Image (cartoon, rainbow, N blue to C red; front, side, top):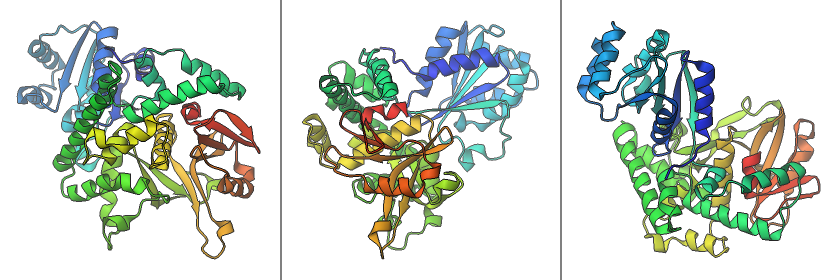
Length: 447
């Protein structure tokens, strides 16, 4: 089964406006679907495709990139012969898969683009850590695009539903509720999405027989792959990366979700773990969210690098990661979500899916936290801050049983001049109350 991804349209736009003047680099976590979308795009939009996977490319191919590039006629002829693929001027695509494993190919993009004969798409994870850009000149002819796990709309497409999201958009634009029956149905679909996640292998394992056990098995393989990558590529600080990775579910299950370095060791210091946090972020395995200490002067200008939250990039992986020591049948989150009794670690999942959705929409993640031990009335915590039309929009993520949003009210009073709309994301239908827009969690994708 072919999975429909929104990135395909962006690649098509690039092909049309670029017309060979730039290469496209697709950044994303391992197993997020980068190779698949490239192969699908190449097969549909070009006369021929040569896909060079640098994770297992033979030395003979790598030698061409070092020894034959002074004459591109010879270079292309040898690649054409090796892959038994005829090349057509302006109608053939080269895919440099896992290009971070062979930086020489990335450096050569400048000259390949200038040659102008063919199009080039690169894929990579951990694309900008030091060891993968060491001693190379990064090409200015390279455009970048991020690929995230499948969003809720793409998940519904895989479930053969191409109508629901259009109706949700209409309700969002008019700010009207869906109605009890439809909201219940969409929320049920969204619960499935939270459990399965957006990693294509997990989605494909699930959609045939609605088999959560098969999905869980696929996710365990992905988590195992991530662990192997940490061992192989986080050279010199792999134990620190592993410690952070393993602690994520525990950190998110607490009411106070700011990452506590003390959980890694009594004397742990940020400077000792900074490279490890960067590794997980660069690999797009996690979505970091930073504290914007003075949001009225700009989110990116005022963020505190030392105070952050760390979400998993895919909520389905978080569900499996949280119970990785147990079998699927022992995973309490599956039962809680399916039986609509999600009080166990509810905040962990709802905040994570909100972070995942906002990040895939292109928002950088910020939150606001203010402590005052002398006067609790001055304390406030806003889960997310996003910028829309130059205005700051505060977002609180709430459980289905919440009664008030006191932090949001205090924040609105304090920063009223800088604010746009204020939102609560929760499990009920659309509602506007006391000047706050309440949206069901599945509508986070429309922000």
